Image (cartoon, rainbow, N blue to C red):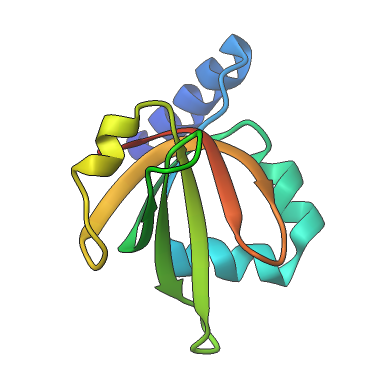
Length: 123
């Protein structure tokens, strides 16, 4: 019972402070939620901080901002893409395709190509 009380109290403090909660998911899970209801996903996570884990599918240091793209597998076995638009290009230099990493960022936008987080950083 105390655990529920403290969780509710923490939620009230966060709401009162106007701070959006942080979410931790893997690349496949975030894509599953997005494809089930795109509008609800965007409303729920607009401006929210998220921590996403997955395998590096691509690293782009040629464009600005630099990015790391995570891949995952959704419930239907399809590949997913989560784009982490980096504030610091040097973070992209530390990872390679195939690495299992975690990124943290603010939900920016989403569409059929993938889900984008900006700003974002490699953990």
